[in-house]
Length: 424
Ligand code: AMP
Image 1 (cartoon, rainbow, N blue to C red):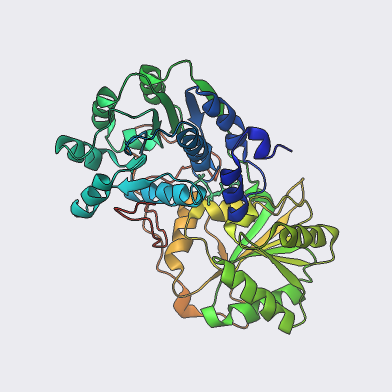
Image 2 (cartoon, rainbow, N blue to C red):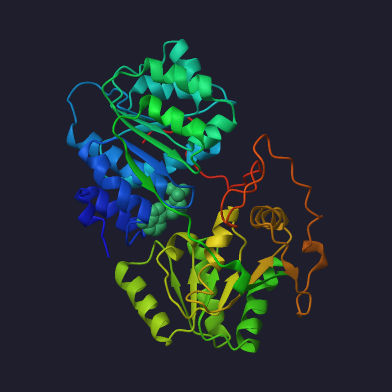
């Protein structure tokens, strides 16, 4: 299996990846990082959840490190993102990967006061992550100079076009210096995107990752409504009554995963937690114990789940519902592998109804409600989903359940740091 070392990444970046708990590059990283490090343009067909952010952020950072000039800081990399949420998320990833590097970045987007952003820009930075409107606004006001950009990333190009940003993108392309490296990522590749890509990519290496097909048909999916405080008791009961010998429980936080392992131990259930804060050794021990059947339950966070490739998983418990619906599909895909069937049980408390509806919208599946348990909580049942808004133009496409077939949809995220004017 390819490692991050094999891809030619520098030590400080490798250390950051280890801290993040990434063990192996995802397919899009494996394919995109080497050509980007060599200086080629890349056309990436990949959607959120494939690890595409690191696929461009790591080569960008390494380039910044390698050719550090002694001059004052100038914007050498520009990342365009369609929404403020995505921009903030990209900024957050840069912060994590650049922890040990002398590289500054910031995130700018509209809808908020520009002054803090302007002040950060004036202090100087190397990497700018921006939404198109605010970028052009601040360029127009003379606060942003793009004449030193060496690396241009257009992320989620299809969504950009959907949102009507094509003219803004063309304006940005006109301001950028001609000699630069380009990267375009899009979840889909309709003609409009192919044309846009053709207009500014040069001899681009095409990288395409097909989303992992999760065979949801073989997964019996149910949801149980339960009070937050009762979740651990319900889980303990289910593990015992279903006699689960190989199951994964997903929690939202690392802290929650650790706490749950202790709570399960109190009722005689052996479990191990795996998440980014665990040392490599601890994670290996947990994974080996789980694979060999010694440890029946693994409690994991989303980040850690990426590396879990165990064929015999019979049950996936969504102890906390994920706030990104794509993660739900990814999580339940840990079961029903290698032709087997699987059980996915989601717990939904009073605060998680909207996440449940988002998941149902994305997957097109209404989860079967299981009320036959001791902790059923009627107050946690959310109102019925709103009917889907009609798609804008193209006729409905047949697509895998984990593809973006439910757009436009509201994206809910936990509020995180990495907001405006957040230089690192
Ligand atoms: P993205 O597709 O860039 O939005 O990434 C999706 C999620 O995968 C993020 O939470 C990343 O932190 C995580 N991730 C990215 N690369 C890896 C990797 N190689 N191993 C484990 N997790 C990863």
